[in-house]
Length: 367
Ligand code: BGC
Ligand code: ZN
Image 1 (tube, helix red, strand yellow):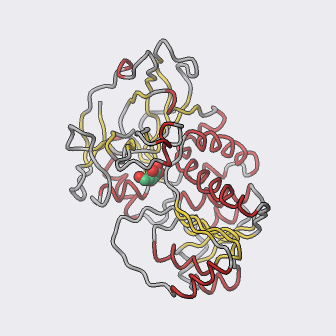
Image 2 (tube, helix red, strand yellow):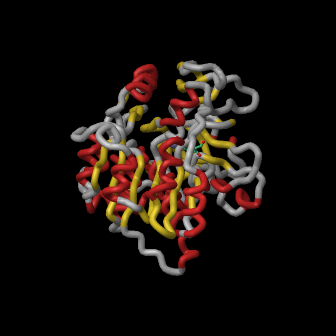
Image 3 (tube, protein in one colour):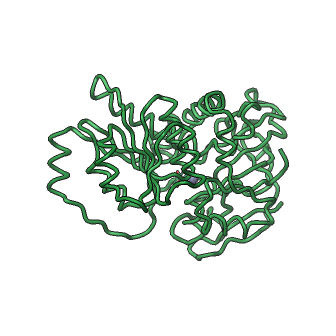
């Protein structure tokens, strides 16, 4: 079957390759689930992998099949699978458990192992292909009523985790009722973070580069959030007007903006970092001031990566709620479909060059 791969370590190596069809019995104990891939989304991580800044091939291969945001349909299940059946629509988690204690209790997103295994990213082939096989532990059913947004499940899980972790951390306060949030970035992660925080009733300002009006700003405003452009005014000026923020969710891909955010948190506030920055930028911050302010005001900054099954299940519920609260909004996030695996060059081109794109995804097979 066809698959889209890169040669890790070799920039711009995205290409079409052949992969043997996956076999149900490759999963032990009759627990295999064979899934036909319907749609696969791509994001900044795929861009970085193709730029040779990130990612690794599975042992025994010199290439890595990319694609970690999957949506598919179950074709066949092994004799000991009860939780899924042929015809079910599904997505799959990305990371597979290693050895640490966190991996052993299902929280592989919190692994402390040296090596982590992620489908389509590191040491395991991904989903930009025609079929895959996996264990039902890593496959999450998507209700058919939100099939049109199924390809958003993986980015949704990332945002769910960041927000849940922030609330978990804030339990230190006994009582935390955040009012104002800033979301940095209006790409897919920024849009979904704005969505979830609006569903929770927070006042949200979403900062992004480009001047409004544009498609991203229209999406943000439809959620009842405020869109602010960094082309028009500096982050500091926006923060002066709208901040300080109880919660800042950073998803711009810029460590400069991530660290600048340290200055705009409200007392007791929390800053969540999600950007994967594979480069080597150095940033300068007013260290004494920021340190003093963090200490005197009990502030927190934390990083979050990946998501385990629990966050995918939350993602299902929030996508369904979103469709009720903001009908049609999720579909408007799916800005750049690419028809078929053969169009992989177009996929990478849109991902790298089209700043209007909220979500680039491949229609691998008709829904
Ligand atoms: C993926 C995560 C992954 C992270 C780091 C992100 O793009 O969505 O699942 O853990 O990259 O590799
Ligand atoms: Zn991703």
